[in-house]
Image: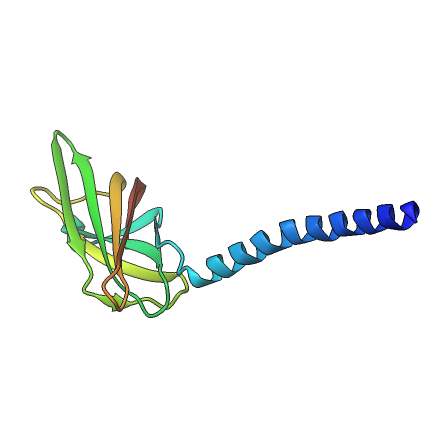
Length: 148
């Protein structure tokens, strides 16, 4: 009789152990599948100079939950001789697809034209859900202005 009770106790402990690990993991997977995911933004390394340097076109890759809406912006700063020139522009609101979306943003230079070579770009992303919940992301990196 004692052998049967010990086997029953071991089996109960084994089942309890399996449930202790399986139930929280299942809950975490369920919670993760319901959350929309954080928005992301990346800046492509090369930007395209336009109109003799009056502008440069920065390409951003943005990702956000499907059905949400986003605005993306880009700022570029470059030292040209002894002058620091730069500019900023942003998109109008667009709909998120849930996949990576490429967004091209023309940035005009002031007070001097951009030149071919190294510059610094900042990208910002503002995302809102259909029920007006907001999320933000930003990034920065060196870029290279190239002639188009």
